[in-house]
Length: 325
Ligand code: ADP
Ligand code: F6P
Image (tube, rainbow, N blue to C red; front, top):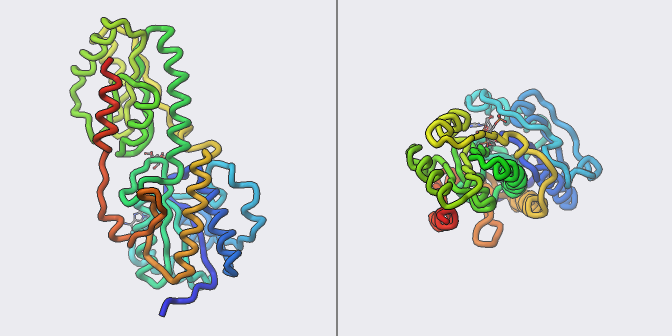
């Protein structure tokens, strides 16, 4: 028989993402509406180990829907990879009467969630990362806001790049994944998109492309470089030397992680937070919420962690076709 849940905990872990607050609010209010108690665990697994656990009521999540960041704070806690430390985490949860847990974060955070599930805490993961690098889901909380923020920044760089007839290398986040780069590449009409999944390191090809486009009369050359490739400053120096065209590097950085979430991030985060509570209420554990083919779905965490996803070939092909002219 499914374990009856009376008190659920919620934490955010890994890099923050706009929309995490919307998810927290939804978890808290959905749980309260179902007659459950809710506790917020601050600073991810690090705060759990330090017992930074607070009662949450409906007012504690008022006025946060529109705010970036996470009111629960977040952390990376390497010691949580140790089985003994995970056991301590589960004991602390039990001591505080927390029998269900919602973990909002990425793949790393889900590994920790799965360990807690094995130790008797009913646990549900909600995908929160700007990187979109979680295989089981087509949507992750924060990606939409991050690409819109990056897109606006790149538009601005493009203005000055065009005025000076320069080449600009703009580095976007994504850790090892190129989704932010690809989306911005298409949205900003970049001439080149470099991402780990596709780039073969052939800088001469980029240089040739810059020269060809110059001959066609292009007033700028925008290269979107994914963080996983990096070396934007070095690349700018080499390209300027080889082409004779002034080249500047811009690393957009953590601006991409902040700001008020977009409508999509607020709505999907709200839906995912509610779904996580519904799953706990139904007795589920070791599941992760996802969005696929227009529906909110859930998967076993281990199955989800085994899944792979790559760059959409059709999208990549479109980006190349559109930048060719
Ligand atoms: P993300 O959740 O965004 O992928 P990280 O990979 O930094 O971010 O992971 C966030 C946290 O999840 C880590 O700091 C650690 O506390 C926990 N974590 C990561 N990997 C594991 C693991 N193998 N076992 C238990 N906990 C883990
Ligand atoms: O996972 C989100 C992310 O912003 C990645 O894109 C980036 O690689 C990393 O986190 C940066 O982490 P930190 O904020 O610790 O520098």
